[in-house]
Length: 203
Image (cartoon, rainbow, N blue to C red; front, side, top):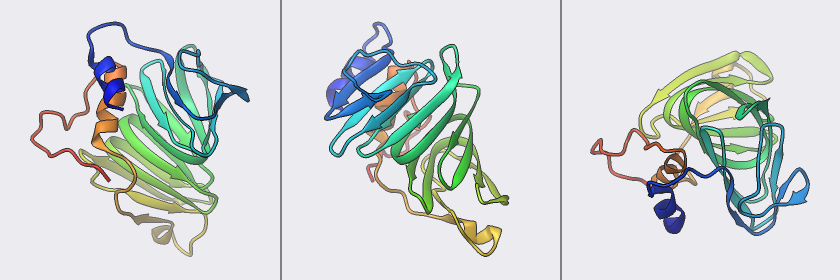
C-alpha cells in the first residue's frame, strides 16, 4: 500500500481499471492483471490470499480475499453493486450509489465505507459520509447513518424479532485510514479527516 499511495498522490494521470492485483483475482471469471480494464457490469472475485485495488469512474475499491463483487450501471458509473460475499473497502464520488449484500441494502451518498458480507450478517462501517441502511428481510428495519470518522459501525442481520434487533451497533474492524487515503488519492480526492486534527486509525 505505501507504494500505491505514493504513486496515487503524484500529480500525474489518474488510473482506471485494475490498479493492483495480488494472488488470484478474476474479472468475469478470467484471470486479472494490473492495468486490466473494468467497467460497470463486470464481476470481480478473489481467491484465498488474493486482493485487488481498482477504479471505476469516480469510485475506488479495495476487495480482500475470498470475495465476490457484481457491478451494474451505465457508462463509467457503477451505480449498483452486489457484494455476494467477502470484504470491500470503497470510496465514492458524488451521486447516489447502492450496494446490496445477502442481508442488507445500503444507499450511498458520497461516502467512504467498509463492508463485510456473510450469509447471516453484514458488517458496515460508514467511515465518513452518509448512508441509508435497510435490512433485506425486514424493510421497516432501517437507519440513516452520518459520520465523520468511523463513528457508527453496524451489524445488519438476516433474521431478528424486531427492527431494533436487525440493525445493531458494532466495533470498528479490519480497515485503516491509510487505505482510505490511498483509495481517495487514486480518484484525486482526500478523505475529510485529512487535515482535521483527527488521529489516523488502524483497526
